[in-house]
Length: 208
Image 1 (tube, one colour):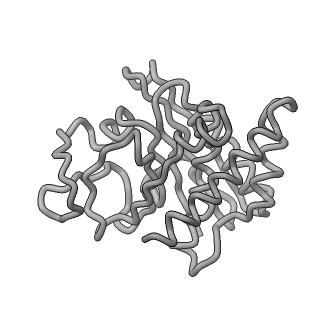
Image 2 (cartoon, rainbow, N blue to C red; image 1 turned 90 degrees about the vertical axis):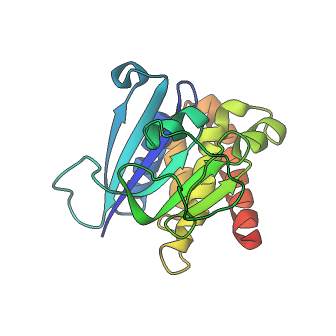
């Protein structure tokens, strides 16, 4: 099993930290993982991203080639993933003229913030999960800055769509990874953010 994930957002949204937590969680689960990052200046935009490769075997090539999942945190990041193709803002999820995400497999899991990202993806091509990620961070936790960790909670639940009803990585492994990846004074906040993400992830899948 080789599973490739990208967390992408605008600068300051914590995409790279989220990727670090994800890779650490995979290791806690007993899997192999690599993590690479690209910062805004290198991409000549305000977009930053963290890529993670997860496998049940030693990883021979550490970079992503075909993504199995992508977490998109901003409109700018979405535009980067479709390489600037104009968005039609069609409220219907249809095949005609739908956007295509570059480097993402058909059938991949696509997680977007329902308030910050307007997308026009073919739901027959991708497994799209749209959830109130930033809103939950701001209104429930009082800190929009932890939206990246809320997004990981949504991701944890949403992977059940790809792995026969079981998540790729357990909640417990994510919580241990948070303990290892964030400053001590922010551990509880980030754990709470992750669990709120799990909660809205489950609610979103139940509505689907």
